[in-house]
Image (cartoon, rainbow, N blue to C red; front, side, top):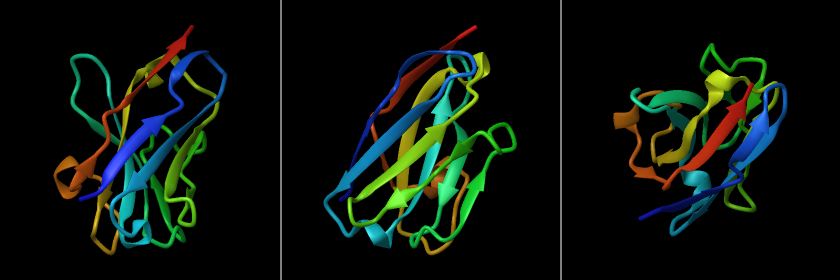
Length: 124
């Protein structure tokens, strides 16, 4: 089992920045590809960013490309989501997820473990 705990959400004005953290425990963190997803009210959960086990490759949804990054620190068992130039449409609950696959993944069903989510609200 892998336990994931997100933190760092909050209220920010449009154009501002936030950094989300996701701390993992229970298994060897570097054996898992990680992803960030978000879910706005009334909408399906959607892929935001993904990173392979080593951290050498990262992937982003078109809606956040150039504004968000997903670094990971395997020594600290933590993956981050750095969010810059935030927009009101980025408002959602953000979830981190882990999968033991060797590639990167953008679909909800491809992930085995999920955090509880953290709320991000961007005001206009």
